[in-house]
Amino acid sequence: MKILVINGVNMNMLGIREPEKYGSMTLKELEKDLYAYSFELGVDLETFQSNFEGEIVEKIQQSINDTDGIIINAAAHTHTSVAIRDAISAVNIPTIEVHMTNIHAREDFRQKSLIAPVCKGQISGFGAESYKLALMGLVALLKK
Image 1: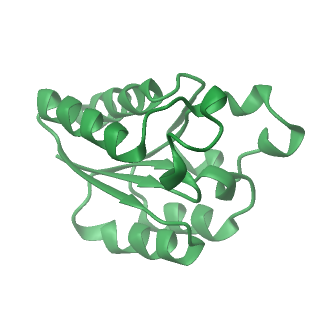
Image 2: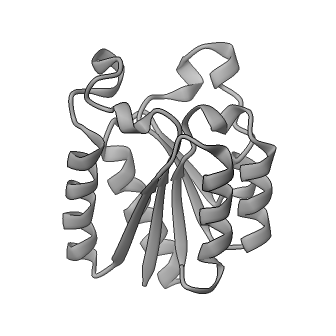
């Protein structure tokens, strides 16, 4: 089983950007933890990060023939990107939306997700653990 984890804009700044909201863990550290957890689950994991919407769309499209599931933290693109939404819908790969913070408890503009309606589920508010919860849920979904 192969899972693709996509991180969007500014996620490369984890550990530096607003540590009171996102913690001190870097993206590399988060990925290392997630790889270790995926090994426990027997999952082949690939990670990808881009600050560019088009690169995220291309990565989603390229995953169509070799990926069983996607976990995506589109970050700010969550609230603005019809293109990412359409790419997720087009590939028809089970996708879980993930956020480290609870987007529903934040600013009004962050509370609306354009990609949630084309995802199988959404996990938010558990910091870096949101990714492990998403991975666990996605694996369970794919095994059904």
